[in-house]
Amino acid sequence: MKFIVCENYEEMSKAGAKIIADLLKSKPKCVLGLATGSTPVGMYEELRRMNKAGEITFKDVTTYNLDEYYPLAPDHDQSYRYFMNHNLFDHVDIDKSRTHVPNGLAEDPAAEGAAYDKAVEDAGNVDIQVLGVGQNGHIGFNEPEDALYVGTHLTSLTDNTIEANSRFFASKADVPTKAITMGMGTIMKARKILVLASGKNKHYVIENMLNDRITCHIPSTLLKTHPDVIVICDRAAFEG
Ligand code: GLP
Image (cartoon, rainbow, N blue to C red; front, side, top):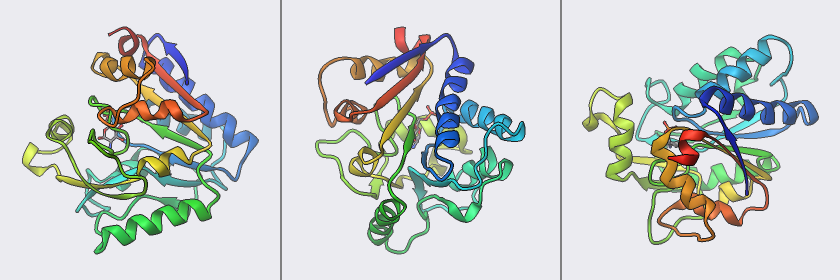
């Protein structure tokens, strides 16, 4: 696991965008695993700028997002499909039919999860998986638990996550209590993993990613077993 410590959020966002841009240049038909949350917003902004400036193209790129609230319609303004359209897909030259987000209205979430994993595999697996981290170390929506899931599955959100994400909804009661998320196995299949973390409230997670232990109670620590992980964080997240 390699750590890059940036001075601030902007620098972190640019460093993350450069890694994605380098992949797009060396492998135009790549598969990106994408994340939502406030952390990658600046990186998506920089990627939009680079695309507009003609520095990179998304023409042949395929994407798979980590997760989606359940149940939530794709056109709901807090859905992760809406987030991705708004922050990236609507503003770059990507073929939207090659962008994928788990279906937050799937009638059979278990079948949706299995089909999602198969689609990722059929696409040749993810080249770079972008990850943010929850304050409790969740990745995607793999919340701290005694045992974690391998594949994409329906999960319940912890109160801590519902509380943290309520800032985007009208009230805490409006936050869906469930989500469909890639499992740890799906995430670990990515050839490279790019973790972004910014701010003091991510220090606990970063601290636990720096030591030599792994625990399902801080899911991001499992990334230590992956051979190619880059963590880009700002000084606030690194030093606390
Ligand atoms: C959500 C998402 C995660 C994200 C996390 C952190 O719960 N499912 O993918 O990493 O929030 O969000 P933020 O970047 O806003 O701190």
